[in-house]
Image 1 (cartoon, rainbow, N blue to C red):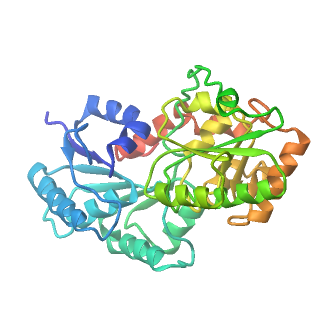
Image 2 (cartoon, rainbow, N blue to C red):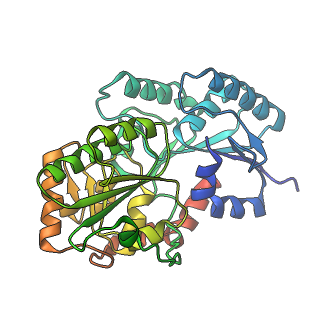
Length: 359
């Protein structure tokens, strides 16, 4: 009997490797599975460019359409906003289009789109609604958005992310405090994420400048790379924060960094169900994160872990309060709801949905 043919895709190989390998391995055992990213790791590649209107994405669209026509997939499973849009756009007008399941890792627009960029992302989603047979979202606000704007011709389901595997076996000591020459009273904070406007590291740099102006001893480590790196470096130099904010680039042993950190911080403007927060929760780190979708889903039962999005004064007050109360460091917090988001908890349900069935 001929096996069902499936295409599993995202706009970057890195995304597929970090979040999807357990699902890819499981599907590969049962189906004729093809995987598409932007590099050479998997069986297919397309020249995805994060700038939605880049000419490279037109080339990616043409290549995806050729692939869909040549392979005649029965089912396509898409991840990331860019790949999901281009795949559905490529499927328009096909005589025998595949069924398409879209997993949303965070819509890039709000209930009332506030910018041209947000309106563009909403327009893109509405344009390919009829090529969306099953829509999976990861937080309550995105569920409300999908229903409000009617973004699927099929079912819309809420899932609990792709699942935290729990790689806390990284135990190599980094001796960060010694390497940075920190004093015992210095608070060491960490944020892991792509350097981008959406992740909003610029807010944290300015907030740590405000903390220093108040005489507070706090150091920020930013792990990750991205388009905003040069702008962030300029701001660090402009505010003379070279010994306060450190850009560390990509790092593999994230749990080793988490274990030597006093407080995990996030200033993201928009999320799906952020892995960086889940990893900090697993270590038991206290967290101070912007009150946005995704963060609220994970930390709603810990209201002192959230501050109003974009409110520098509130962020500083919360951080200073945490420091003075001494509620810092590994293991100081327990997050009972973490178990709901582990891979072992969500895998079977997610896999059944990806196969096109019901859990």
